[in-house]
Amino acid sequence: QMAGAEGLLSFGAEDAAAFGWIDYDARHAPVTTIYGGTSEINRNNIAERHLGLPRSR
Image (cartoon, rainbow, N blue to C red; front, side, top):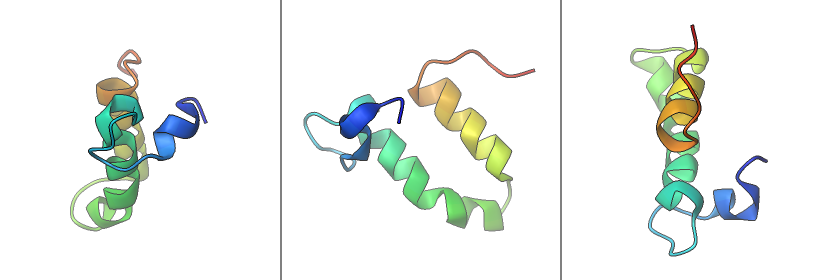
């Protein structure tokens, strides 16, 4: 919701928020939790790398 409608655009789309990485990470998050992480780690990655939020403590 924070990224607005542009957050729904696919990776590589011209107007996509964060160049489409939000969509890409959201689609691959269920897969990555199987082989080595938790949902919290994925949320932190998206927040830090793509939304520019500070690191969580």
